[in-house]
Image (cartoon, rainbow, N blue to C red; front, side):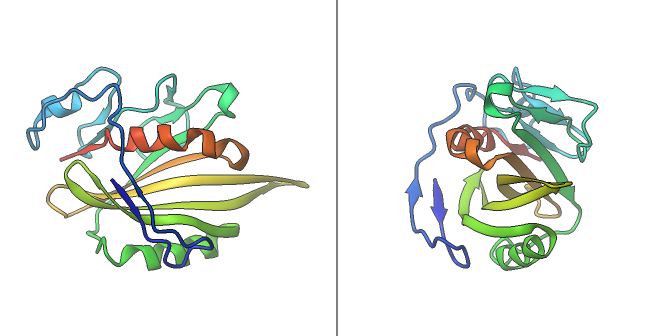
Length: 189
């Protein structure tokens, strides 16, 4: 379930969405079990302790500048959306991270605006999510982008992961549900 807070977003919302489990989900729920990370289609980084099943039809790009998992790239007809995972070694206060993150994103991205934010449960842990809109400029061209990021703490709360799904703004709404479903396959040690 996602609970959208809307606090500080340009379009305040209070919604509740029930996730439909991914068709891939049929794994055991034993905590810290390597079996949780071995399901077909799952990308697993054992040293970092995280795995995810990218949306169906996506491919892993080992040459992309990913943080540690290979970046996953969606099909051409969807505008080549991407999935990337980054890891932090500092524990975060899941209740306070939103304000800090919004301030940082507003400073880093051109024309940044918060579309939606809130909390959800991923791998039996409370996680924070934020959807942002911004513009990337290349020369005299501008590309409107929207992403959906999930901040997920490790099981021991000693580190956290940021899982980011990114798409062109005009394709985002059609991909949103697939991004949420993929996020629900995240498993952390």
